Each structure stands twice: as structure tokens, then as C-alpha cells.
Image (cartoon, rainbow, N blue to C red; front, side):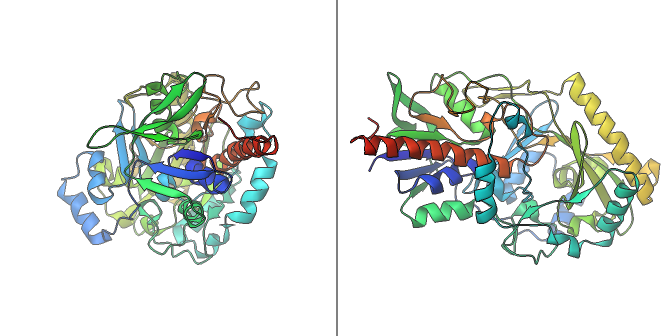
Length: 439
């Protein structure tokens, strides 16, 4: 059996590993370690906030080793390096956002149908919404903004509304792609953690494997197929180090939370992003922004008295990732105008909720949905294979999105990873029927 190396174990990598194991002997190379949720209690968290010792967002790694923080002049960039990737610290939203793919001729209906059978998705969490969330929903509906409960990937309808979605669900209710990873391993795939892929080794028009960094130097891992799914920050860096140019079209879906002081709001103990409003260039959703609550001085109110509304932006693809992983990304004039429009709407919502206009404040702009650096086009819509890649190398993460989704990407990333895996399976099956394998 031929070998497939899958780089990364997040939404794209775990999906590809599950789908390919059996057609190939799959080896998953994950830079991070097994994911462990943060266990710090609220009392300790609040004590740290009030101590003013939390002065830099990169300190989050002390309590959450999986998290990765990068900073640009305009924003804080967040992702995770661990089994399950960033799906472990996401809010578990299961939204289909493939409009941009459809415009270039990509139809993922079969993949989304498969996902519906494999991934538990529910909106039943609305039965447990706290009073502040219910009031916010009513205010937004009265404004004619057409809110709807956010579909959540959850293994149970019994969400505890503990507010710990982004710290790793303590009750195991939030679904993440470690479930796919476990399935792949249970069927024979090999998972190697702490394996940072330096580059793809290419001979002629094919890859022969990858180089993996280590304390004793780089180690060569041979493969007949390489699928890079290291995320929107990791994948372009690996490609650049391999001599494959990526596009300077990085988007990140920036988030700005507009908040106000409202006594006894208790939003920090609520499920994150319980409902969503779609606007032309952004979405709105109730959100307690922990990055701002921990590190932004404007947020040093009692946790129980803060209520926030998130603006998640469809940003312009104007950034880049270097071979060393250095990220250049700034907000354009268009991005800032869209954010200000969202700030106006969010402020109106908070005022109608009963907040004093003088108590409204902004959070830290942060982002965690990178992609767009190897975008699919009409020419590659059927093959999912860019001509810059060797014949037996594929990409299976947000790097393929032609433009910013402006919303939760996990479900759509799983769908594109399924398509990539299907194409790879068809290739090996075709070679078998012809009496050979890829060589």
C-alpha cells in the first residue's frame, strides 16, 4: 500500500486522514501536541485580570499551550497547534459558507450531504439561552436584522452554557475534528505529534516526501502523496520553503467586539455566538471576547457586567505569509469602513438593550480564520490542484478559499477536504485498476 503524508490535524487534515486511510497508509504529522483544555477557574481568571499582570496576549500560552498568538500593528492573530487544530478552540459553529466557491463553479453539495450524516449539528442550544441572550435576540429581531440560532457542532443537546467554548469544552459536548482523527487512527493511520514539517522534498514534477525538523536535525519522511493542511498560516509557509510561491491574498476574517457595561448580564457564562445576523460585509453575533476581557484595559469591569456584540468581517485579501512564517496583514480603508458600519449597528443594539451610550467600549481586533493564499479558480475548480504544485501534492485547508468567508469556516473546510480526499482516492483506484500505483 502506498503512503500518504497529511500535514496538520485540524479541520482539513483530520478529514483527509479519515477519508484516505485504507486507500493509502496515512501518516499524520502534527506540529503541536495532544490538545488539553484550559482548566483555570473563573475566580483565578478574574484575579489575574485585576492584577494587571496580563499585559500581552501571548501570555495565553501559559494556560493554553496549544494556542498560538501573533501580533501585527492592526490586530492579534490566533490559531492552535495541537491535535484537532484550531477546531479545538473555536466556538463550534457549523455554518455552510461556500458562496464564493460556487461562483467559480465548485459544487460541494455531495460533501455537505456526507457531513450532515457524520457531524452532529444542532440549534437546540436556544432552549438554554440566558436572559441577556434572549433579550438581545428580541432587540435584533425588532430592528429587522433577521437573526437565527447558530448551528452548532455538538455531541449532545445538553449544552451547559458555561462560556468555555474557546477554552476547550469541559463537558465534551462541543464536537471538533479530533473525532475524525481518532477514526483515522483506529483504522490504522499513524499520528505523529511534535512534528514540524520544514518543507516538501521535490524531485522533478513529483514530491518524494517531506523533511521534518527535530532536535538532531531534519528527518526525511518518504511518501507517495503529500496533502498539506497546516492551516492558513502554516500551509503557505511550508509551500514557500518548498519553493512553491503562494499568493499575497491572505484574509483573516477580523473580529471586533463592541461591548457595554450592563449589570448582571452574565454573558461570560453563555454559549459563544448563540445566534447570527448576516450583513453584506460582516456578521453580527453576541460574543464575550476573552482576548479583550483578559488583556484590554477598557474591559476591566466585573466579568458579570460585560455584554458584547461581535462584528466578524469579510476582509480584503491583502496579506502574505513568508517562508519563515512572518505574516504581513493590515486593515484596508475598505475594511475599516465596513468595521465602522458594524460598530454603528452593534452600538444601536446595545443601547436598545438598555446600555448607557457612555458605557460602550471596543475590544481588541483579533482574527483566526486565515486563508486565500493558494485560491481555487475556475481553472482549478474541477481538479482542486494548482499548477504550481507537484503532481502528487494537494492542499486541503482555508488556503484554497478564493476570498474571505466572513464567518465560521470549519464546515466548509471539511467539505473541501472531503473533495480533495475523493480526488486522491480516485487517483489511486484508477492506478490500481490499470495495474499500478502512482510512482
